[in-house]
Amino acid sequence: MSGPRDTIASAVRGAVQGVAGKVGEVVGRRSSGAQQTLTVGRPVDDVAALWRDPAAVRQALGDAGTVEADGDRWTWRLARPGSDEPVEWRTTLEEGGPSTAFPGSSVVLRWSDPADASEAASELVVVLREAPQDLGTEQVVRLDLPVPDLAAGAMALTLGYRARALLMTGEVPTITPQPSGRSADR
Figure 1 (tube, one colour):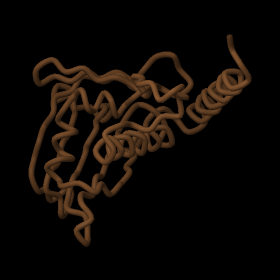
Figure 2 (figure 1 turned 30 degrees about the horizontal axis):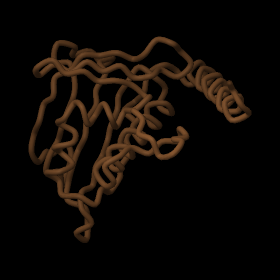
Figure 3 (figure 1 turned 90 degrees about the horizontal axis):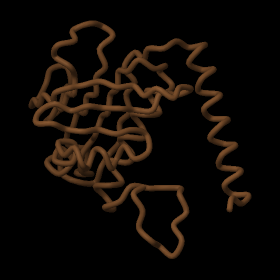
Figure 4 (figure 1 turned 180 degrees about the vertical axis):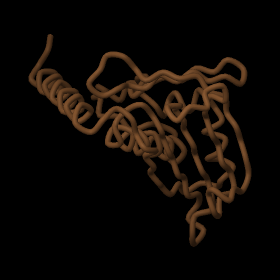
């Protein structure tokens, strides 16, 4: 039985998808490398461990996408605004220490496809460094995807925010109602 809450949620989802589709038509289909920075009140090693764990990254993605790991190969599927077809790409995780490309960084995690050297290649880069004033870790999430900047920026913020929440509270925030506090996947 669907109630007013389900009807409103369905209408909002439809409106958001419609707007995202129109934005994609107007702005273009390729991001220029959207980036979001968040401070996480945990040590760099803890934050890096979350990003190295495909199950934790999958949990942080929530309903925005999936990630599967097979050895050192990761397959990503992220929701594409205005389309039923997800953005899909296969990557390997490259890990590095301090980088001149990211001043002050202590850990750089890069998911890219080494076989695809084209400018159209999708990429996720997470840069971790000590946050100022001993506040934990500064986490920079950069996404370069075949979607508009607006959508890539929203995905980078969502992914970074959910990863931070998972590290700080042990769970990912949700707007899905949970009757009686029962557990759910998302």
